[in-house]
Amino acid sequence: MNQSSFNNKYLPYVLLLPTFVVLVIFLFYPAIVTFLLAFYKVNPYTSASKFAGLYNFRKLFSSSGYLHSFLLSLWFSILVVVLGLVVSLALAVLLDQNLKGSKIYRTLLIWPYALSPAIAGALFNFLFNPANGIVCYFSKRYTWMTEGSWAFFVVVLAATWKNLGYNIVFYLTALRNVPSDSLEAASIDGAGAWKRFFKITLAYISPTTFFLLVMNTTYAYFSSFGLIDVLTEGGPADSTNILIYELYRDFFVNSRIGFAAAESLVMFVLVVIITVFQFRTTGRSVHYQ
Image 1: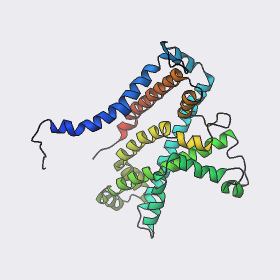
Image 2 (image 1 turned 90 degrees about the horizontal axis):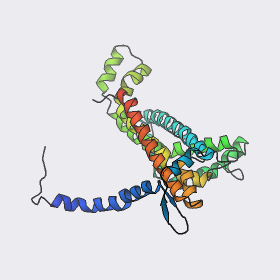
Image 3 (image 1 turned 180 degrees about the horizontal axis):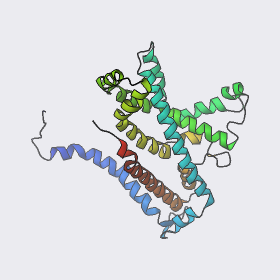
């Protein structure tokens, strides 16, 4: 393997400096300030702050509205992750076949990932709008966006659809790396198509599935704000008010800065806990070649 070398030992650090500066200014510094604000009461008009210890956290977990958002987010992330991975894998398996026009199908299915969450939300709003939505017209149901359970279903559907392209790209790559000789050997031994898929293919693509499990969990918690803001604005009656939207409301609408900072810290810790849990449980079932 060829190795590159720098004649000047300081040159690598100079080349990395712009990236490091950008990370410090736009990522590390705001994150540290936000986490510190979680322990302060902040006046929204004068920005004066006073150390309050765990006051914001005690208020959070004694609030029925926040606990509702907490459980709703958990349920939302489970549905988006499970539905997204199952549907993506099924579509990737179909696209991996040598079907006529498969390149067109691949492009059409990957395309949603190129859209911003706000545009995806606008598309689903157009489909399910009670006044002129196409789905409402054909289903003869006009309460998709006005009944809490149905609105939650539409948000889950939109979030899953938005991320399908990302999952499909990874699954297609993983499926093409499954050794054909292993499948042929299993076929000669009498294993059927389903048995070959569950016993061999799933084992070979398990690292990709585990990676997507972590990425989809992060997406469900942090990247669905635009979708919900355009589609439901957290309603009706807070039925789609997941944690990221509750945080937005507390910071930008209610000006509860310390409270919102505590919420962001709780979300961060929650996702870290879920990811570590996934590594400790699902990660043990992953087989690397």
